[in-house]
Each structure stands twice: as structure tokens, then as C-alpha cells.
Length: 159
Image (cartoon, rainbow, N blue to C red; front, side, top):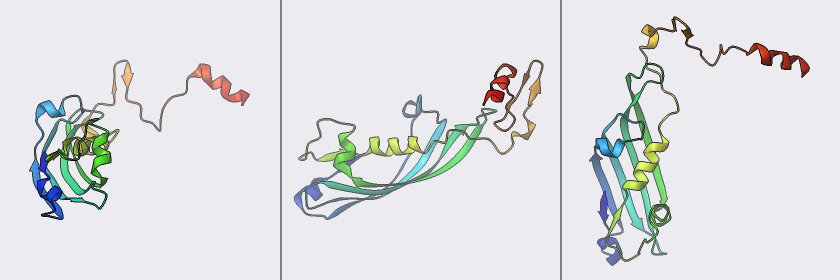
């Protein structure tokens, strides 16, 4: 997602508008926990301030497909991220050799990092009622009904 900033550097334009749709490949999603991430809408602008730094103000919307925490069935999860701030500082985290005279800026690392922060810790499918919760030698335990270890229960009396 390289953005051409030559018009900003030369003073021809005050801001560059961004309006694109991006679909992530399987290679980009590898090891992220996301099964599918297509048609992500990226809309906003990049401007240059008086300190010769770039400011970014974009909104990233889409639907990621994640595995259900219980059944591993695919679950759609909508997200909406607003990214705003100093682009030079944000990119400095990813690249050590950021130059002010470059002609393009790659905003992909910023967008990807913010999408990853939107992944919920746990997501459960709406149709989870048909999942077996007991079997031979095992039982699904929820947070509310976690059993107390009898050996540790005696310590409770000491407090």
C-alpha cells in the first residue's frame, strides 16, 4: 500500500486522499489467527504539517473470519478502526531508516498492526448450542462453573 507523497513534498497538494479496498492473501494472514480478511475498506487522508511531518487520518472497516473458540467453526467479526496521528512516528516503529525525502510511504504495517489489535481474545459462534458439552471422561467447563481443587479448598479455610 504505497502512497505517493511527491505532491505533498512539493507543496502542490495539502493532503492526499485514500479510498481503497484491499483483500489480504493467505500468506499475509499466516500465523495471525484470522482465517479470511477480504474487502477491507480504507478511507481517509495523509497531510503534511508545518514541521515537515506527515499526519494520517484514516478509517479501516471490514469483516474478519475467525475460528470459534469452542467449535472452530468460522465466525464473522466486524471491525472498525480509526487511525490518526503522526505518520513518521508510527512508521519509525517499523523501519529504522525512514527518510523525509522519499517519494512513497508504505502504510500497510500501520493498518495491519491496528487490524491485529482488533482480534478478540475469544469469539463464540451463535449456533454453538449443538456442540457436545460432555463425553466419556471429559466435560466442557465454563468460567462460571469452574471446579475447585479439593486439595486447595482447605487453604480457603486458613484465610
